[in-house]
Image: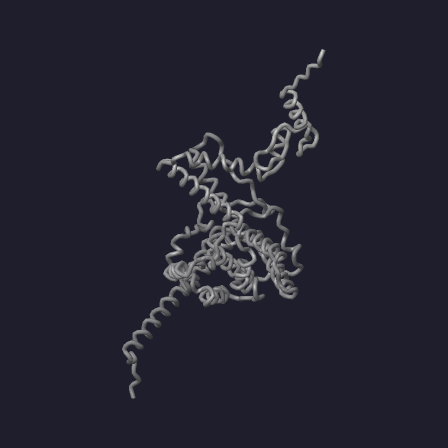
Length: 396
């Protein structure tokens, strides 16, 4: 019986399939490959291996799919407008973030040439100053008349507004008024006899006027916020006050006020208003003296804290060693004088300040008469210069 030989293509295809399936995955090299990448012909076994086998292949595949979808889309005017709004908001947020990272500060150099000219014009005409809200001094607040300190000079507990009494707006106003008043000392003031073995100088009242004037000058110059630049504001105080800054010993109220007015009218501070600004500061001194010992102690305590803040800031300043030592010595000397004056003021009778205020008021009246006569003289000189002829001729 002849042998029957059967041939079939099935067995051949099966063998080819088995040989291909025996190829190891080129990605993980653990499993047999079942697929081939249409781009690079790399054999792989699973979707995970396909995604990780080549970023170039997968990214280009995704990009082509996205581009194909976008080309099929036909954007209308509404979708375009929405996209523009999204891009605009994104751009504004980026600008805000960049300003926050830079501190949100813009210097004069950041302005354009035209913006610099407009800024300088606004400063020269006083237009820029109108944008600054004027500061209302704390010594003119109604609550300044009710400042009370304890027997040892420390701050008494401020009155607490009870719940249900009055309206919420009234409570808020009263709270803000007390918040504006500088607090008194946190620790008891030492007796003057423990600070010096000799009797206090009778000129301390004159020196107090000098110190109060310089304090009011600094607060008005910095619009009520001298602590924004404590070191510079204290240097202003030392330049105006002969007692704190130059070691002066004025002997009369007139001498003390004259020195203060000369610095107020100097070219450095003439922009503040000159003599009229100085007369306004004398009114501040008079008003503070009429408030009495408690208000004066709070004032001196506020000045002491300002000097201490300046000493702290001085440590971070990059100055020459000798310059730093000189400023440090001046600040310490001024702080000691202010503290001594605070202890002395606390021990004085309340009626002493009304008498001192009356003396300063008399000197202020004389200064006003002098200022008016000076204006008349200046106007007369200007009129003479315009006419070219003297008003009074010598008769021979």
